[in-house]
Amino acid sequence: MRPFGLVWITCLAAVLATAGAAPPLHAEDWLADRGGRLEIVPAANGDRIPDFSAAGFGAPGAVLPVVAEAVRLAPQPDAGDRDAIQAAIDAVSARPLPSSGLRGAIVLAPGTYRLDGPLQISASGVVLRGSGSGDGGTVLSFEQPPGPVIGIAGAGRWRAAEPPRAIVDAYVPVGAEAVTLKSAAGLAVGDRVVVQRPFTAAFVAEIGMDQIPPRAGRTTVQWKPGRGLLMARTIVSVTGDTVGLDAPVVDAIEAADGGTVWRYEFPGEITRVGLESLSIDATPVAPVAPLSLEQGRALRLTGVLVDRASDAWVRDVRFRNLSSYVVVDALAREVTLEDVHGRNDLPPWWPVPAFAFSVDGQRTLVRRCSVTAENMMIATTQSRAAGPIVFQDCEGEGPRVSAGPHQRWAAGILFDNIDVSGSVAVVDRGNMGSGQGWAGANVVVWNSAADRGFHVASPPTAYTWIIGATGEILPDPDHPPIVLPLPPGAPRSLYDAQVSGTLQ
Image 1 (cartoon, rainbow, N blue to C red):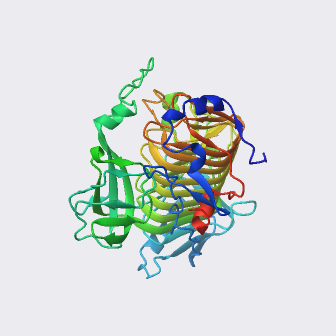
Image 2 (image 1 turned 90 degrees about the vertical axis):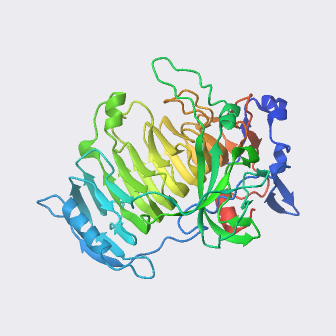
Image 3 (image 1 turned 180 degrees about the horizontal axis):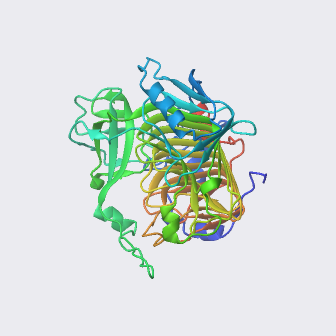
C-alpha cells in the first residue's frame, strides 16, 4: 500500500494566485486547532465541510444486524436453483412482520447455485445470506443476462403529503442542519420531509451548464431548470418555524432559488433488507471480447440493485466478471455496502469505464471495498445524487481504475481513504456523455491516494476540498479547489471522527 500523508501539490502557486475565486476564508481556516482539538470551521457565510455521519444503515454508526435463520437451502446438482431460492424468499416475505422489522434470513449452504434468472427481494425484513464469500462458501453463478442478478427493491415513489412550504432563510449554507420556513405549523418530530433545492435558469447559467460546448458526432443536452436536488430528511426538532434535520443540507440554497420543504409518504418502500456472505460470478455469460457502445449498453451485467428501500445493506459479498457490482438507485436511502469486493479477470468488454459501486441514492455508506480490473470507476455517483454519501477505505487496482462523481451535480460526497491506481477526478466533465457537466458539488477527498493524480476543481457556488493527499494534485486554475495538508493530529478517517464526535 502507498503511504498516506504526503501532499504533492502541482500548480499550487496557480491555486493561491486565484484565491480571489476561492471561498470567503483562507483555505487553512476550514479546519482549526482549538486547544489541541481539531474542529471544522464555517466560512463567513456559514458554509462548512458537511457532517457525513448520517450516511448508512441506522446512521450514525449503527452496527448491521444479525438476522435469525428462517429457511436453509442447498444447491440442486441436476437442476437450476433460481426457482427454489425465489420460492424461499417469497415464503419468508409472506410471514407477519414482527416489531423488530426482521422476518428472517434465507440461508444458502456452501456450494454453487446456478441461476437462470434474477432473484428479487421486495418485502421488508428479508435477508438472503450465504455461507461465506470466500473459498468453500456460497457462489451464485449467473447464467441468464441481462439485468441485476439480485434486486432489492420496493415499489412506487415518494408521494407528497402536503403542498411545499417555502424556505425563508436568505441563505441556507452548505452543511446546515436546520431551515426556517414560512410556516412550520403541523410539522412534528419524526416527520419525513424533502428539502428541495430547485435548479433555476439563473443557477444553471451561473454554473455554465446552459452553454456546454457541443461534441462532434454526439448530441449534447444543455441543462434545464427543474426540480434540482431532493434531500430526504427526518425532522428532529421544531422551534417556532425552524425545523432541525437529521442530516445536513448538502448544497447551499439562496432565497432566489425558491427552496421548499414538504412532507412525503412512501408506502411502497421496504426496510431492513439485506444480502450477505456470498459471491456472484457472471463468468458464464460475460463476453470474452470488446463490445460496441450499443452492445455494451444492452448487456448490463449488474450484481445487485438496491432501490425503493431504506436501512438496507450488502455485506461480505464478492463479485466476478460483472460490468457493475452494486447500484444504489435514486429512491434508496440509508444504505450500507460493507466488505464488498470485485474482480474482473476477463478483458473489459465495455467501451467506456464501468461503475463498480455506483450511488444515485441518498445517505449511502460504502466501506471496505475493492476492485481489481482494467477499466472501472470503483466509487462514483450519478445525476443529482443527494448526500451525505461516503466511500471509505476503498482500493482499486488496475491501469484505469478511478474514483470520483460521474455526472450532473451530485452533492455532498466524501472520498475517505480512497487508494486507486488510476485517478480521482472531481471536475466539469463538459460534453462527456450527453452533457455530464459539473459532476460533483461540495465534495471532500480526505487522506486519499491516486497514482495518476487528483484532477480537481470547485464548481461555481460550491466547493471541492482536498485534505491530505498522496499523488500529484492537478487543480483547475479557473475553478481552484481547497487544497490542505492533513493537519497534525488529524484523524485518519473523517467519517469515523464525525461518527464518534471527535471532529465536528
